[in-house]
Image 1: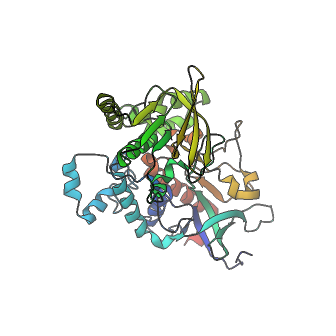
Image 2: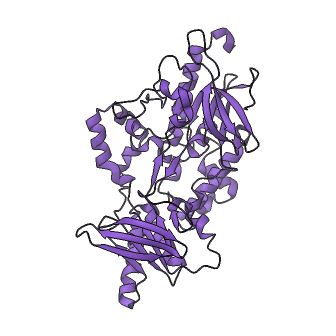
Image 3: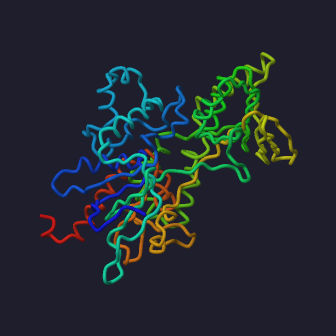
Length: 437
């Protein structure tokens, strides 16, 4: 049974998940001044901070400017900025001389770890949230506090909250009928799985997908396994370059969230269609050029290892003890071909996690639109019935209401500030003035 009692401490904010989004929120709360600063705790199932560790390739760069770090757009003077990190690490001048806005991904991850270590006292690692339930109801049936049930590995305990902020990240997406295993990987686990190939010498890889991760995986496998064939399978004629031009990048501006939120549904759909190529299934232009260079060089030399199966889809994949049998289908003719591979890597993206899976009966208090999606206020708070007075905020899963940048790194600092402001404003209304003195 969970350890709980009426004496369980009440936190103003309980954060579920501790990736970059809730890290930015933790910092924003830490930098609040005055005696009324909200109390907060963040619950993370991982044993330590980590963000897409399986794709921290040595040469991969961020596709986001370092100025869109955890704090700068909210407060350029914050001690948690990427520039302060560089100064502390002794690399500020060298980074300036590097003349880039896009640091290495491994460097940015180190920055995130550096920032997380400074708010470590508000995080509980190894704490997996398994359910949320009312902490009790008022005479009118209303819920002001909720209990968050957590599996710590040594039992179940409870954290009590006035407001919840979900930042539960994304769930790896696999093609229909495909099951991950020793021979079939999702790209998010690439480095972890490569580390398990001790002594193995794969002869053939198949990589499915057309986005940045697919191209990076293809390049990495082709480079690391110099005697192996790598088949890249995608439905397009070729990798599509990401549109990171200056005007198009305005879709990631904080003000663009207001524009999108207030737009009619048909305009929302148009904007997503117009600017999907800034973020979805697109690849850095330099990486496209490098892969084409390798492919052409192999044609000239007469030894083909890199195979681009364009206008093609994955039709089936069956793992067995010796490898995986991959069936691909040419879209234009319907012709099918079987590839016997050692490893299949699916770089097929991610899906947001529905927080109502954890909310249990409280999920019935949450309002949905005509498409079954959660209704979300501009401050990222889920619209609920009046009986649920505990705020439920989302950092992720709000693309339908807030647009492309709603859960991305680009808007993390501003999003955190808006949530903090909303929590403080609601608390000021709900708490009698005498109690705030």
